[in-house]
Length: 186
Image (cartoon, rainbow, N blue to C red):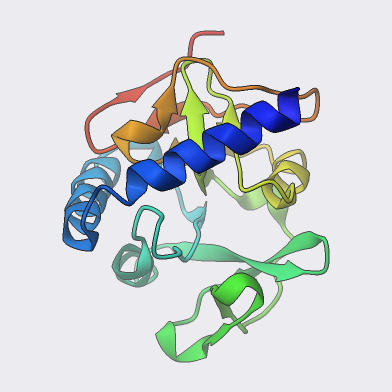
């Protein structure tokens, strides 16, 4: 039943996204990221795990490039069933990888203890800080290796009261959208 609930929620969110224009989602993205860069945890962080967005996610391309000049930005690369982390060294060093995601080709980053902040995408988040991903478990496997402060980012319509969870799911320390941000109730 849980898998079916997750599948239906993923479909619901995907259909909801289609009701917004690309420009509107970009506007929401810029608003969210403009607020997020003022967060004390972000300001103090030296090494940040980010992601290079797909078209239907909070748009991070310019944000990644902007902050790579002042902070160490780490991006995930799909390698088989795992996410390998690599340093972002500029747009010129990105190549399309699995799932059509632009991925860095720079040096592998394995010093997980030195990641100060992880900014994580999701299909949906709930009020308890739970995250619903795309269903492959990549971030679930990565997040259990990180001690970094975790902020889930999404559009406002991706925040739900409750999503189905499993024992291996890692919750976020905060959830942010363009309209709100909160520390989850646990």
